[in-house]
Amino acid sequence: MPPDSRVHAYDLTSRQAEDALRGQLEGEGWTYFLPRPVVAAARLSLRAKARADAGQVTEALPGEAMELLWEDAHGWAYVRTLHDRYLGWTLTEGLTQAQSGEVLTVTALRAHIYAGPKVSQPMIGELCLGATVNRRSAEVVTEGGRRWVPVGLPGGAPGWVGEATLSPIPEADPAALALRFLDTPYVWGGRSAWGLDCSGLTQLVFGAFGQPLPRDADQQQEFLNVVERPVRGDLAFFPGHVGLMLDERRMVHANATQMRVTIETLGEGDYGQQLAVGCTGFGRWDA
Image (cartoon, rainbow, N blue to C red; front, side, top):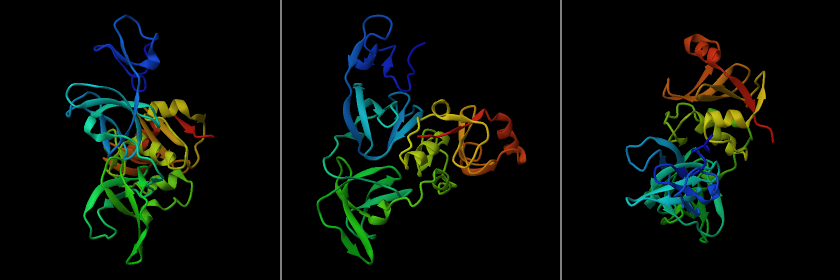
């Protein structure tokens, strides 16, 4: 069986592959590449092919660490997101080098970088839960009772964020965090509160508490420990889908039926009955 092309970089047509696969691929004529460290300068769409009309497979969040495997002649780069080793094509112009200094993680669902320490200043960047920014050496500014932190996105202009966007999440409860995403639009391959898919939601809320999950629903099911009776915080799996249990029957999930994040009760109503019949099992994250 060939390596999983979602996380192992190789192309049978161009005969290009990452150096880690040297000696593992059949045939001759392979060109191997050593990955180069890069970071996402903004929220980047990773696509199945090096085309703007190709389907999105995942997203890289602002400041997220990545690897660049190889580039084509038209401004596209084949990259990997390091936290889950997922692969896709993105425009090279969206990549930059990591900056030195303190790294701050955004805890607000959605936020912006401002040109100056005031809410009336122009917004110069878009942020989301899990994005990272670099702390600049300037002093924190207090304005109108609000504290502004000097930051910068990698490769971007210096700016400011409200300190509240960096406040610690009060309780390590992925289910409670997932509920804050209610009504967020469904976006295939999305990983942020600007739009996400089912496994993007579960990966994002567990990752916020240092509990990493793979990218796709089938990968998450394989990764977790199987349980028979779910409790709050367990994941429920279906063919090509995953949701986060709030208790033994209620589930929050990003779903393409409602085109948003909703709560369903397994076995209740037409949709809930369909989900109950289609459920393939439950999984639990254990350290």
